[in-house]
Length: 196
Image (cartoon, rainbow, N blue to C red):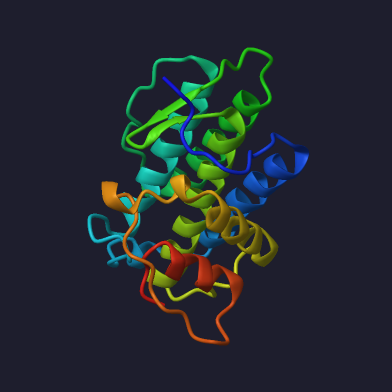
């Protein structure tokens, strides 16, 4: 299968890996700020409440890592609320190691919109982690100005590489307007279909 997309190539780099780590750090900060009584709050993702979205983020993060490493992915087991932050941290560690493995074969990640290179896979995972950090912060009343430099870079790349925003597959909604004074992460969320 051909690698998805055309136009400017996305190059694998330390910056990509650093941005992934910073997006995951943003989720970790939000997770630590979620009290138990907010686990059933609605989120900007209609299919999931806070608890379900956290499980989704852990599962998707592990899916990226397993796929890149050539492992068979098993759906994430239900985790007690008290251990969700630790479970997410473990998923980040596994996935980060997979991204720098010497055994990555390209194209390495197959999606409904095509096969992605390792660089595009890391970028796609970073986009996903950061926008879900925003979703969780928004749902639990926390600040949404998360990893602003990473959000700016995600927006820059997504405007160049439209194939990473497959709006016709249902993965992302239509772009929404953002206030003129919106922070970068709010603008990223709006670009990916969230109401800001």
